[in-house]
Image 1: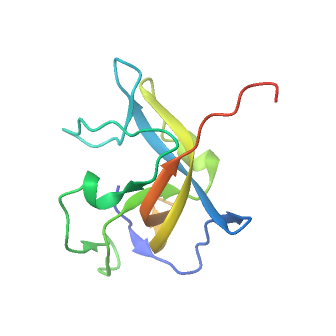
Image 2: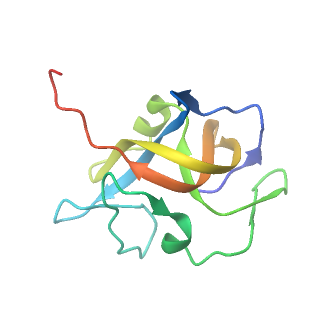
Length: 129
């Protein structure tokens, strides 16, 4: 996932001083979650802060597809749950995450996206609670 264009008007959801968004993750055969990019074999633990440097070999900036701006690499996540859900298929899941160190906000294929250096996948809430 790369931003089509930067837009500082895109605002991730905040509550209690924390930043929340939605991450699309692959579900492996053993039910582990992993970021959805080709060749990735790293699982992503739940409830643990992850640093984007450990999940990417990109140290330089990423160029937006349409406006040519450059932004820092990081975890990309959807601002809106319904946008994350629209990107699902058989072996993908959308999970609510908490973010720290936001480096960019913008648009990807008509959907609002936030990019951050750190993320934590939140545990799923039990149904009925």
